[in-house]
Length: 218
Image (cartoon, rainbow, N blue to C red):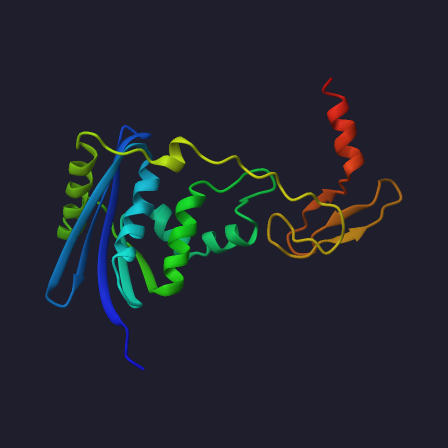
């Protein structure tokens, strides 16, 4: 089996203001070869540009590679290396019972690319005299200042957020940690659902409850 090629990538994203016009830049290094890419959008966020820079870099690779990707975004590096994204995926992109993860469209693309490539995300301090990081920074800002930038479609027109999964019976995944919940009974309260792992509790929902709640709106 042929060994994977080892690629080094530096990425950066910028926004001015935030949210506002945004740009991304990246430098790809392989042996004695070098490639620079950049681009931008008329309205986006800094975090989206940080993620987008990683996506566009990995999409350039034509075969599975072993990649070391340097970024000055703790948000990007921590989300990928500390397992945040995998946890959000298991919860159907819900961070908590009531709060949905942001930038889901980009995390889905980046997660899929990391299934193809072996990617190690490494944080590097920004504006600290690292020549490749500084180059990515300049590429990002040059990109966001271009005229006639395209729209970041899924930022400007996000799809409607799905409702949290209705909790109706035992065995369903906990919204916080995905552990199957169990049904418990109490002498003082109605039966409820309980997560044995993170200790979250849920009221047992039903269609009748939904109908009664809707009735109170009129």
